[in-house]
Length: 118
Image (cartoon, rainbow, N blue to C red):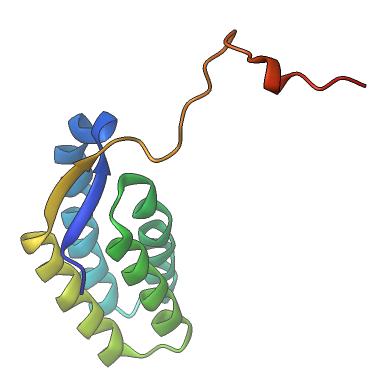
């Protein structure tokens, strides 16, 4: 398991709330599993899958994908194991701040090589 998250520097201020939301989601996932609410489990797995990568938490996206597959098959034991790992991950993850991976366009700074002649 990858305990390192490569978080874009410009998202650092969002991390406390992001991680608090993930812990809340973990508790809600446990509750949904206890009540066998497959619809909620599916929704939370999709959310995990969607939010991990943009914030630099690839492992959360991986958990979301694994959880989604286990939910489709109604594999309670597998889901329990994923939730255990997810909660452990949230307590052990180390954050490394990186520059934003996708360069932002600089409007008005066209170079001659950017202009295509027809």
